[in-house]
Image (spheres, rainbow, N blue to C red):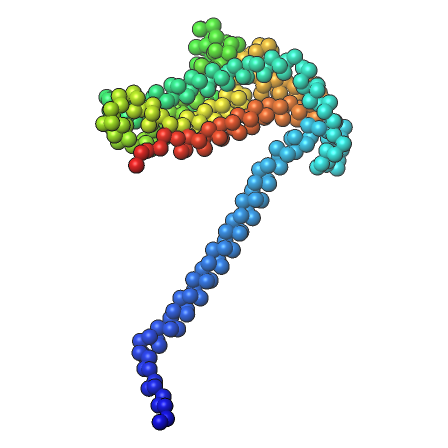
Amino acid sequence: MSATAPPPVAVPAVATAAVPGAVRAVRHRRRVRRRSRLARRLLGVLAVAVALVWAFPIYWMVSSAFLPTARLQRPEPTFFPVDGTLANFRQVLTDESFAASFRVSLAVTALTLAGAVLFAFVAALAVSRFRFRGRKSFILTILVVQMIPAEGLFISQYAVLDDWGLVNSVLGLSIVYVAAILPFTVWMLRGFVNGVPIELEEAAMVDGLSRTQAFFRITFPLLAPGLVASGVYGFLQAWNEYTLALVVMTEPGERTLPLWLQGLVEANRATDWGVVMAGATLIAVPVIGFFLLVQKRMSAGLVAGAVKG
């Protein structure tokens, strides 16, 4: 008996017509993925270029700190200080005025950081967690004060400090810095406090904790990134600020580091740019060290105080 071939299977017309459409869809998705990869690569190249442009002045400052002024004044630039020297750093570190200015800047920054973060934290909790008369007016006042140029308050601030006998004092400059930093810090911390649901505290209170215990065990760890961010902002503002210090600290022995650097530039007609760059590099070192220190705290604060499932 001869085997008979099976009858041909009829393919539906709808399925046959859908095949070209599916192929076009697959090709379209591949083109979209290729374009997406190309766009990401172009954005990566652009980001690297922007980072190099941003970092080059810092590299030039550090590189110039290892070169003598004669090398810096040559027409051809020196990009790599292969045969550099530490004489500029030795001259800065042996300068007694640098040590005095460093102590003043360190004291002013510490007082400013503690006062600004403490007052801003309490104010942010008040406007975020409580409803009271004048709350909206207080928030609006913060925004209005933030819009006032700092230069417009110099005369009044100096007059107040002069009446209190706080001109040329660390405490007086710290008060002025806290007043300047506080509005933006309050606004920043208010956003972080609003981002933590109050239901977390209420759930902890149901479990038997008091309101204070619930806040410090549940909410406060979640606010660590905001406290660190506001602390970084306050540190940078107090450490690098120049104009307010120029108005308040008029005595040579009470200068902050930015004022000391300006005096170093104006000390001689022929500025020793190697020493100036060495001084600027040393001023930047505490900022970099502080940021590296709090960066770990910021990462830890993002996962601290996790909610029980």
